Every structure is written in structure tokens, then in C-alpha cells.
Image (cartoon, rainbow, N blue to C red):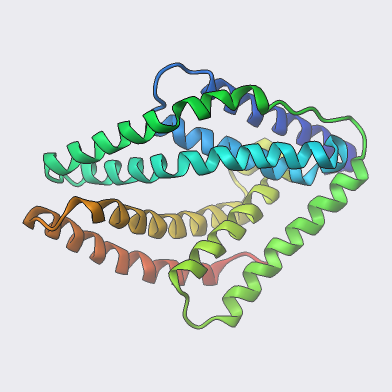
Length: 256
């Protein structure tokens, strides 16, 4: 994609992600699990897009925007973890009392942060100039190369991975995926083999992280027989997902 076309595409994507986040932040009701997920995705993508195009936005404005988006992501993270746990518990037919307790916690978490979340909606405005085409293209290329090299070095230099290392790898991989997508026209994204593989590996690492988040959500609920069975099922799932993730990361498309 030529620099001028890339810059136009970047501006459109940034505006779209910021608008999507703003629309969700203006909702009066407590955000659903899907809405929380969509808001987090919009914020993460917008943060990265702003970083790539900082020359067209201004470095101080970019930093301010990224800091505000990051603060929102921190507020939403405990709610998201609770949503992940609730989804899994409902899908697996877990005891209703466990589900009810987590639902009550989720409502409490939302109540504690809703005013801070809604107050942020007027602070996420950002405007990009229509210049610095070449700088954006060069910066995108550097960031892509950095993400690819970090993933490759991490995988090649490690024989065993701690949970923290796998989480860190997933964050870099997600950045790689988002940057790679930015270079593709929308109609090509559905069929690009490298992108499909990046998404598959990201999903594998995400499933592992979700399982860990669910186990953390269950810790404060006590040690009843029902919870013991739920935890045992989760730990078996975690072991399987861990093996799958270690296999998937070996398939990353470094030559894409």
C-alpha cells in the first residue's frame, strides 16, 4: 500500500475506533459482556493506531490520548475477567449459586467504576492531520519489524515458558496482528493466510489466559464440593490449552 493510501486508511481506522469507543461510553445502561469486549478492542486498537501516527497527531496529544485509553482499559479489566468467568460457567452448566455470586460481583464492579468510565467519554477526542505520509509508513514498518523480531526471539530462545512470558508474548503478537491488518485492504483480510494464522495463535494464547482468569475469579468463592469440581475441570482444560499454545507459537508466520 502506497504511503498516501496507507495514511488515508490509517486516519479512517483511527476515527472508526475512537467513534466506536465513544458510542459505547455514551450508553446509559451497564455495558454487557460483549459491549465491554468491544470497547476494550476499540481502545487497544486506537491506542496503537495513535502511536503509529503520532507525527500526524502530535506527540503530546498522542501521549495524552494513549494514557486516557490505558486508564479506561485498567478500569474495565476486572469486569472483563468476571465476564469471561461467567461465560464459561454458564456454558458448562456450573452450579447456579456460583454463577449468582459472580453476577453480583460483576454488578458491584461496574457500580464502582461507572462514573469514572462515563466521565472519560469527552476526553477521547483525537484529530489527525493529513500529512506525514512517509513518516507513518516508516514508523509502521519499524513497529512491525520490532513486534515480529520480539516474537521470534522469544520463541526461539525459550524452551519453557512461564505464564507471565506467554501473556507478554500474546501482547506482542496482538500488536503484530493489528499492524499487519493495517497494511491489508479490508477485502483481503478475510483470506490472507498469514493473518489467519496470527489470529489462530492469538486465540490459542487468549484461551489459555482466559482459563487462568477464571481460576482467579473463583478463588474468593471458598472451597465447596461444587467449586472443587469446577476448579478440577478448569485445571484439566488449562493443561490442554497450555500444550496447544506451545504448539501454536511454533507456527508463527515470520516471513509474512
